[in-house]
Length: 244
Image 1 (cartoon, rainbow, N blue to C red):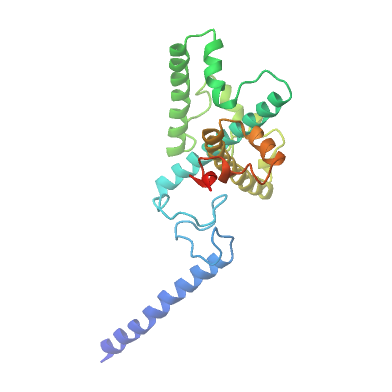
Image 2: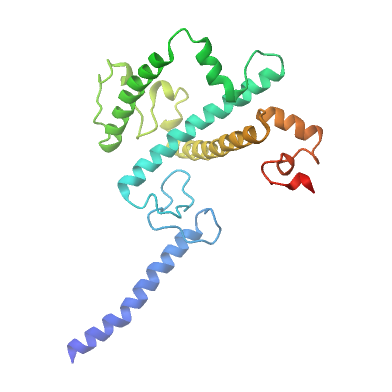
């Protein structure tokens, strides 16, 4: 009889425990900004990562080791995108003002034409140097701190940061990482701007494919005739639209 009562008590407590955990998770989701207001974030995205808004529909970061890799991959791509987008906009604006810069889409081709070094030598050198650096970074990702002082002739000793992906020293001249609150805020700002830059770069590629012009040229044309020069009238984005 005692065993039966204990079993019945366990069955009555179990649903309440599960419901309680769900309620706690729901409240946790409601207390943080999410990509879709009111949605339930995945259990593995608890809001501790910079720029975590609970978006992972393909479960790409569900495994802890893969999540570490995805965080670093996004960060590196975001930084390259910010540099690339800023460079495209700067050279496009300068070209509109008479500077001898080629269209961003042809810049690589023009650089190869005028380079004193053969293309094969450039590719080999980049593969060698980038491969070495990226291998070191991969080892440090898998085992933080394993790439100790003096691993690169002592050059990197003054670039130590607090965590993977965030070097300090010369890369933090304003000491922003010394204050935890400002460091946390800066990480969120960086990844948000980086995500915007990645989307912008995809837009630049799509624009050039449709119009064969730079983003600044597209903007100038749109401002000059905003009702007739749009994404819907370029003849590519919305097929057959201009026929009506």
